[in-house]
Length: 264
Image (cartoon, rainbow, N blue to C red; front, side):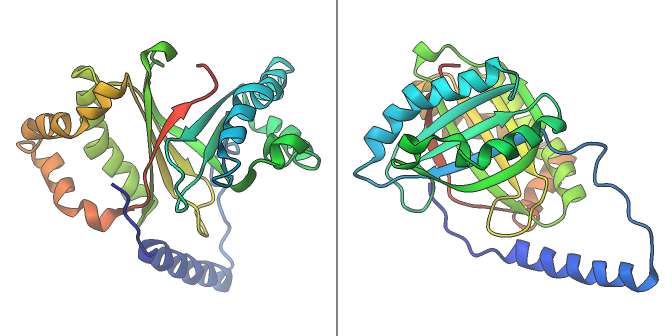
């Protein structure tokens, strides 16, 4: 289901962050580094037109994949994946590239590439689809292995914004992970990845869930499986407490159902 939201959580958090920054500057307190290293994931969304969508998909499956494979072979990226939206949806994206670097220093290589190939695309690719939003992210939760491509696996991508980072991490650990582990035990989900935006300011997402279902039949069983897994979890006080306040902790935005074009 597609859900369109305003961005109240982000607006409140941005105002709070600005006020906190003013207070810190006023008392001249030292600042701590956000993390020991910079983010090693880059997620780029691309937008095409209805008329160009078929050709853009073919490009990503062909020349686009060849370009990214060459970057991987040269050691400029550690891995990549192209996802393509099932539908011509004007509210979301047509394609997404999920790029991994072996270390943060390699991001500098990508910065150089962007000067001549925005979003990693050559002139032919840019004539078919343009990069819209690029997010530097941390892959903080991951489990499972990619299902065989021949199985017809389905990717379900869900963006969220959250109220506060530490609170959200506890929510994912205590509420989300017990559920997705249950879905994996039930046999419908083969892999999940949860990314956090390192710089969550502006119009992009704060957290992005990438669920990989084994096939379309497994994806069709999503709702009854959610209900089945939640039933025993409701008896656990910690999980039940988080369930009761989840709407205050995070807000869900437009979902995308997608295919994988990279042959993983």
